[in-house]
Length: 324
Image (cartoon, rainbow, N blue to C red):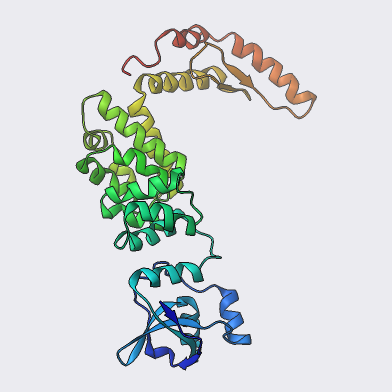
């Protein structure tokens, strides 16, 4: 690899910016645009001569700003292999904060050029990853999933940890869950729980995850009008949990119904804090003075006299998960 010491001035239109080594495309931030507009270009981009023009190796955001400004570009020429161009790009972007999606995009480029051992021991440390760490194992395992999941990971909609339950699914099951990550952005916990509960519910019933999703009313949530992305994920996660823990779900549903009836017309709220490990419940009320306190005292007497307490306490006597 050679990098010229000479700095040349090139028309922005003469530089092609579509090389695969530019694996972290992105819009330039305002501070870079302001700096280049007011102070000029301080750091040359790296280019490779290509016929009558040049191919960009590093400096895509600087090139984009200078193109918009209609200014020529300061550049240094390089001669390098595909591997060396990727390493140059990594080096010039060393200060950028990296997401799992960005790391995977880089690994996808180097995956064509290096062995898995070289990716682990050479490229991973360049991106702040320990060769013995869990993240590099998860990233490399992602290559065993269908390519259709890559955009969800690289955009941040699907967390890296979701690769573990996905890897335990069949291809048909993976295709069945893919629509749930097409537009919704999942947190790590929600995505892992959703996939794990669906998979475990399927295995417990000797069904496929595809059948669980089709029969459980999951897909209509994706097209329900007026439902925010956050509410859609909450609803999908709740359905998955109900599929995985049907007996517990029935107990919780009945407990909520009875609690509302017992506390109807009062300021009290009834909850079960321990998922039926004991019959205990919690009654809470908030008061802001002698008047509300007096009313809460009367409400408590009314609640205590409810005939529904025996049914509520006896819910815990049933086994929580007979299907598991």
